Amino acid sequence: QVQLVESGGELVQPGGSLRLSCAASGFTLDYYAIGWFRQAPGKEREGVSCISSFDDRTYYADSVKGRFTISRDNAKNTVYLRMNSLKPEDTAVYYCVGEDGSSCHPTIVSADFGSWGQGTQVTVSS
Image 1 (tube, rainbow, N blue to C red):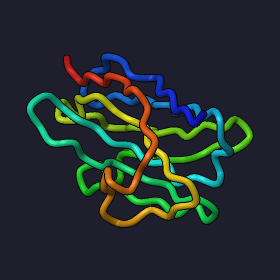
Image 2 (cartoon, rainbow, N blue to C red; image 1 turned 60 degrees about the horizontal axis):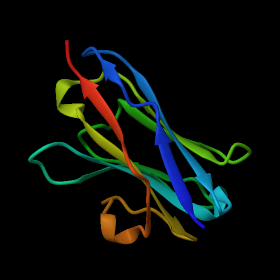
Image 3 (cartoon, one colour; image 1 turned 180 degrees about the horizontal axis):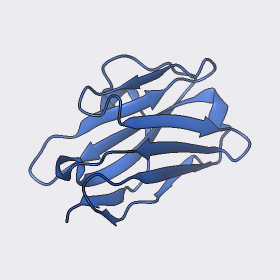
Image 4 (cartoon, helix red, strand yellow; image 1 turned 90 degrees about the horizontal axis):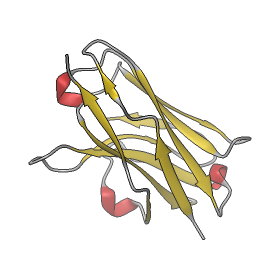
């Protein structure tokens, strides 16, 4: 059974950093494209970042480019999202998503991913 479990979300001050983790089970992570989405109250879901299977090509939303970094550790079957210079507008529930044998695209859309985690809350506030 494919399962994705996020962790690492918490309350952080503006300008701070967090690292989110997405632990995968039931499948081999390096065969999957893995992405991160976020959704804030009253706002549409936004594709934040994606890392492709096999070649590890990465993509980012313009809103996070230069501040967020996605990476994978295949030995730990885990994908990370490092978030620096956090802003209040980064506050949202962050979801880890995956798709078998897929590549990422510059526009990260939810329809491209069949497996979703339960989400982890990130709150950026002073």
